[in-house]
Image (tube, rainbow, N blue to C red; front, side, top):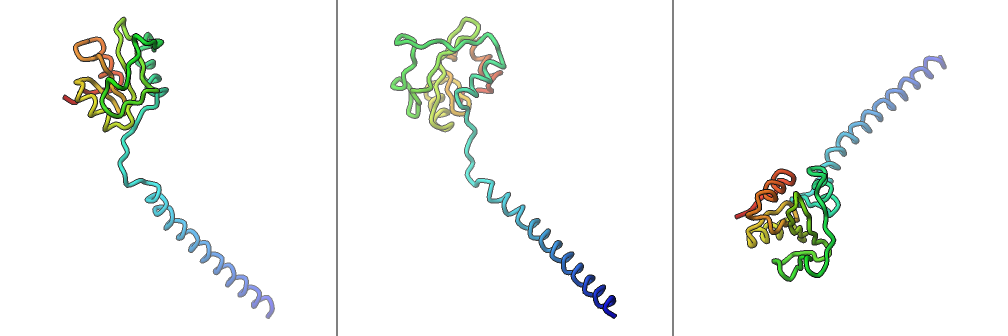
Length: 151
């Protein structure tokens, strides 16, 4: 008789463990979508390029591009640009013997606004200045970066 009781008890314990595993699995399945929803942000923050990412895209597109050394004569100054310019991240690139100013902005919205005001090109949080009217540069920034002139 002990064997029937112990078998019944073992069966009951096995059923409880099986049910516990099912409940635990269901809890996990419930929490996965919940966690995914929490991880998705409600705000739509536009993508940005860091200076290194921007240069990486530039060099992958055309290996002949050069980032020029800046001096007092060729350095783009934020005081000459619309609001949002980040002075620590202004550059000059040279592509196919033609130079352009490359200016980082605090946000993509400010970059777009500046590009519109300057009648130049922008991508994400960067403005490409001295582009308009230079076919080589217009071709380069539109093909390599997908830059647009918001005019």
